[in-house]
Length: 480
Image (cartoon, rainbow, N blue to C red; front, side, top):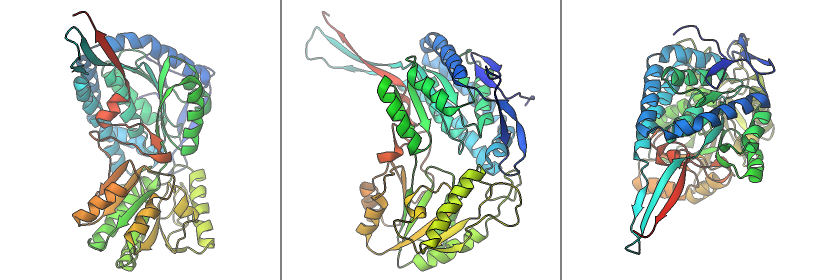
């Protein structure tokens, strides 16, 4: 890969912020500066929206096959450079290289998936009640789409929205997190290298509140996709109510895990630790509240604590690293305060619970196993977004289901059992948008991704994800 200068992409050009603002990007594993990047204002968002609006008619008029060719070429460009791209992502978000590589592969897969799925968004002919009438349902691209995405998956979070929107014929203005902007810039570069016309995809980096207001108030922005906290999602809903801007919201999660006594306890404990500590626990669908049947709870806790102690913390660029740092000091301190408050209320920390002594620099936090919980403790009630595993024994299945459903979140839930009746009973009664049975990764381009309750609205990926960026038009033809 040639040397790339990380700037904003507006109207086909890589540019500085209009007011010359800058942002110092920090490596969370070393606390060293990775570089100084543009940091814009509402002016940059306005310029990007104007560019996307100007590019929309020509992009929307292309055939799905023409658009698909570009997306496929972008996917090929990514796959040919995954090792280099993974380093860029690991440097700015901290996750191990293997996780970054997998994320970039998924980013390419999403381009391929939606490139092909768009070819099947053909609408339908509806049989009419009268012989002289014809009824058609057609799908048409929505317009300009704004995206605001989070730092925890700087490629995947935006790829599932961009790939769908572009395949549908929409143009995009993406505002990634200021903590991980380079991954978004490189994803956009893949599309540029693939020959996407100027203005079809734009990337801005800057003040999220000011840029979000531009997305909400500009009538040319027909939809806003947001990945982030429930608190911010509610603010966006308030703003969208004034302009009737369509929203897709992938918000917070607090995923329950129900472990039944018919499983291989040691194996499930090992899998649970691996799943929990992916990206240092900074995953919206991360398993969080582990409800373990009382017959196996003691054994599960023993294995879990042992596996957690064996995890190697370090710079994600080092091959020996199992888990990298958290994204910044503020996130680490927030997590530590939750663990400390819960311990002061009677919870027992079996391992971890603090910053590792051997790592002087970087935003690291020890893998933590905690028991003795009550439902009012922070580590039970609130989204952790960090490497902490609360374990709660249960005896009554109905009571465990009630506890799992008791919180405001409804993104993902997990069940570990070898009994088909139990599995069916669980997925039918758990109030979550995604339920994984004997599986720890409820995410793939072919399946809808999204939550219920306060975990959001709308769906990304799958057939449903494409329809999120298409308007449905009913056509009535009479006098035939």
